[in-house]
Image (tube, rainbow, N blue to C red):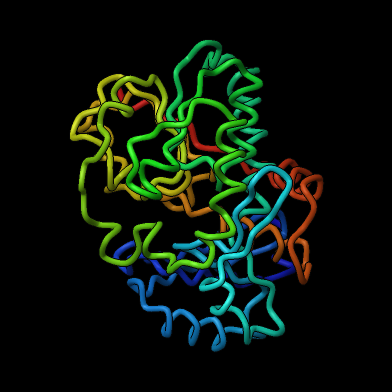
Length: 305
């Protein structure tokens, strides 16, 4: 066994529930990584304090439970409240997963289609929130899927599903400058809210073949049963996996690999890749793909039924 040449430390500070906290040591090539996730139960002051505490002491930080940026077509908008969390972080790069999502999830959909794992052609796909997964949405459309977006359903509580990328981009251009100025908790479940199940707009979950997107939205709003459905999402625990199996889900695809029995969010994986590279900022799409290939970091595909 080759000796470990480098040790890296990556930590994700999340506005999500502390019940999902985890710490694992993983080895990739000759690099040993300590990967941690610390939830603050929606406490912004605590999240900011932890960010400042670890600044300069770890190789990269993830920001979880919120997004720093949201994309509408080619435009990028910054969430004002999220930006305040990292205002005083000067040394350590902070990643929210948005840079990696675009390349990782686009690549995943093409791979699932290319290898015949999932035939997306004419499959009905419900993407619970499209604006934070534009890359996935574009790849699904390229693969021939029939898309429904839940952005207005779960973001604003309006029973108005969007049925095309063009409609999503149009609404995003109108709403993104406004919603990024609102408190994040108005738009996204955080803290203990992530643990509460409040089924909503169940018909869109049930009428589609595939449910895709952020797991906190899926978990919070899904009906009790999802018989025979395929779920493509980001971060699940062993408890979440058991809940999906009980609901009758047939196939679970997590875009990030399983580390010690759980998958971490894309913010953690983006921070991990930036730490591996020794970079001080987010990488290009090509650099992320190169690292994913180099270290054989693959999505997790699991048949639950």
